[in-house]
Length: 532
Image (cartoon, rainbow, N blue to C red; front, top):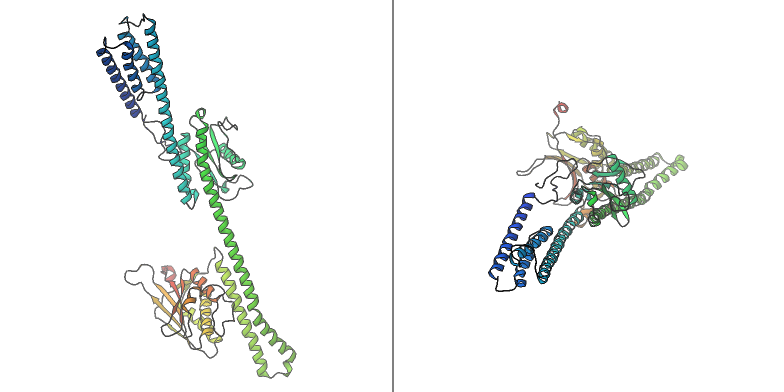
């Protein structure tokens, strides 16, 4: 019988039975028989040559030596039979009366008995040593297997990926397909199928047994003292007293299951249990770190908002109080100035509130944008109208390349991005601000889609090189005269909007002073039905 690969459902691919190939076993038996025959012939020939030259005891030693040497190649039963055959043949051929198995003298009987006993003792010792050597080799192979599985689990970021090698090793131990049940997260209150990950095919009873093993964190099956009538082992995947899964080790021959075999299976399960615990602790640590970071950002945002909202609220309260208490004694110009202060501060509050809320929304998982095909000219026109309405006498220069493609974007978000960039340029520069839109095609040898670049440029003091890497972080504000106004989330919101559209916001220092904040967006092909 050749080593076979089973096609049964749930049997790991490539799993081979532990029996040696029959042809190899037959070849070993034939070689052992040939060696034994050669040794017997050599002993017979040697005893014949020494006949009448040495006594019977010395002749008997030749057959004892042949028996000892043959036991190296023969199995224990065959070695015992060969020793008996050597003793009988020596009696028949050399012990008087020759040609029969009768023994005349008592000392000859003692010699034959001692010859047989010594041969059998040595054959038994050789068989025992051979079994111990085989067990040592098997233990070494198993230790190497455990080490390989342990290293694979240690180096794997996701232990679920290593479930297949562990299941295959358990299948080889039981010589039947094994199955695994691994917890996805914490232990559920009830047996919920979506709370575990299953490897291998299981019927309802086996699934219930795995849940019981997982919850009790105890092994049961043959030899465990619990549910010994079961034809398989149910072993917990343990680590530090807790279970993170359970394994079903089906046994081809349950009556031949041993404690050492179960100990090997449990060692494999514990390796996987340690890896699962490490993965759970890593997820918990990451979750706790993310929660602490979120809480820190939330606290910092609340502190910054409460601080930065005080100034415009104080201005609004002062102007409104003056209008209420002294409105009749104020000139029309004074009333106009106070009203303008209220409007400006309310707009500032509105801008800070919009930026803060937008940043929180874009940082939330699963955010969806209201995407549509928009014209770059219309988005820039909206931004120019806002900028000129709030920029006093300053002028914003816009320059757009002709024939720009449509953008797949959320127009309100892009308008807010440009408003923030222009307002930021007004804060940190006193000269005109440029708004440039151009198409950046692929360079020779580059891959990817062409991109459209929307750049807001100023001639201010610029950003120091040491500060450029953190200018887009939350609560970062520059040193300009108007830097104190604002929460410090405007550029962070701009970067979040850019990345939500699959683009990027970059800062480039200009050659003769100033900064250029550039929004790079991918240009996508317009579907024919929408383009029409």
